[in-house]
Image (tube, rainbow, N blue to C red; front, top):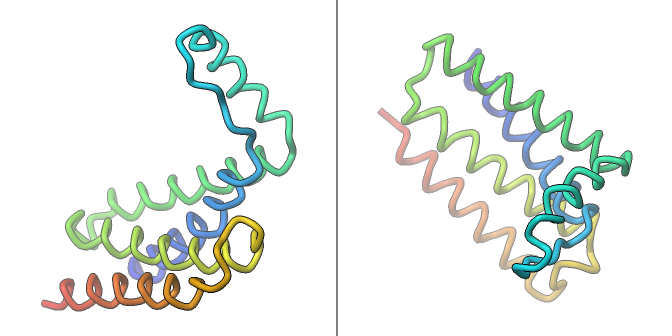
Amino acid sequence: MSISQLAFVGLIWGVTGPFIGNTSKPMQTSLQTKSKSIFQNLTQFKQKSVMIAYLVNQLGSLLFNYVLVSGELPVSKAVPVANSLSLLVATIMSIIVFPEVTNKPNSVAIILGSFCVCLGIALSQID
């Protein structure tokens, strides 16, 4: 059961990550605006898309912590599984939903590379 829960966590994180990253406004990082950066970061939650994606992402984090606390899987197996699936789903979501951000000619290579990372992690988790 915990593997399916971790797959669901990876799916949630992978879907919400691109939305949080691509819909929030970039922040200035100069020393003069350092004190304003916290306020700017908080004002981004006024956007519904950022707020919904953030809340769903945090629900995924709660489920991930529940799986870790249940003790069915050790952390050394749970973290790579959730993160590799998150990487693969985030890559695919970024290419599909935000095509203007991703480089179209390299899309197949990016997906293939992400799949190879996931496959390598899956092979390393076999007992």
